[in-house]
Image (cartoon, rainbow, N blue to C red; front, side):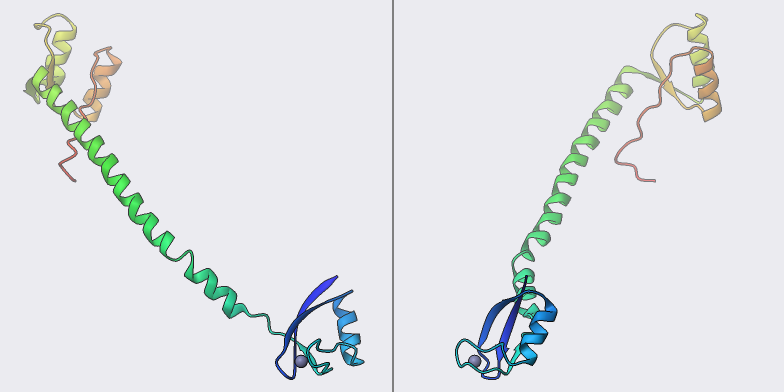
Length: 152
Ligand SMILES: [Zn+2]
């Protein structure tokens, strides 16, 4: 079964069921499809009102997607602010708890590890190769998270 929206030459709109598209064509050709309002046999298939349907679709969801990304942005910002605050606090704790030995870090860290230097928490700079060498020697080091306030 197939349902057609039909319109007569008097612009009466109605719907009718047909066994198939071919059955409609056959019945319409023979003048068997008539308007229930004026009995006119000059009936044509309505151009389905896509304008009406699309207008409905456009009107209803339009405000929703516009509002949602804005909320997402706010949530991300809040989350990032939280993460930034945590990283900042962690950095401050590391700075408070450690002595800055600067570029002497790899050497000093190795000395502390080997017991040649006083055991104390230190921080400083190490190149990627130096840091890897220290880790391979079993010196427990970890990277200090970069400051969230410094970009680039
Ligand atoms: Zn009619």
